[in-house]
Length: 216
Image (cartoon, rainbow, N blue to C red; front, side, top):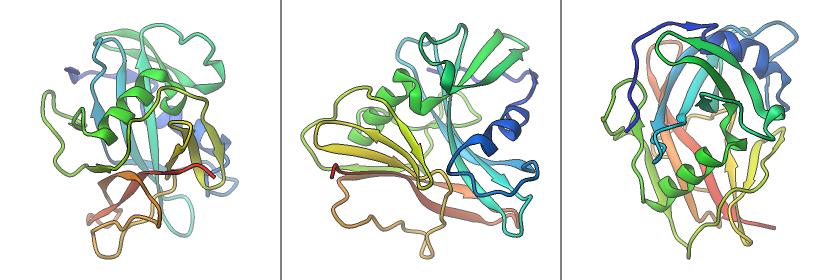
């Protein structure tokens, strides 16, 4: 079970993401710096209790139209070997000391737990409260079992993560609210993760975070 510590981070997560987000191919902002606010998300537990796993939603209000992004992050007490390209930055945690924050799509612990979530073997946890399930996160799956960690790739549509020989995960980085609050899956989809986040006007939106589909 992940324990949520009420303490200071230097720099903050939003400060790290302000410089990191514009380097991503799926970032839709302009030349100026993002203006970020935390808008939602959820956590997953690492069975070993070593790695923090957070699926954060942040909203960038710097452009003409605010855009919300899904940012899966992992927090580690030491560098992850071979993942220098996925490092978002380092932070000083008031309780745990130095923490290395990674783009979680490149962290095998997060990927394994995301697959377990889609298959229904684990439950999403509240982003801000210890030992509390997040009932707003939904998932589905139809298949014969997902594989383990393989290399993730970013493109203008988001992040693609092979999940088995025949399937792949598409992580929606720039989120699109579903008009009827009940996200509909694309044709041929084999599974999904959906959730909610807060809009700048205070209302809540709901949409797809992750879709599992056949590999082409």
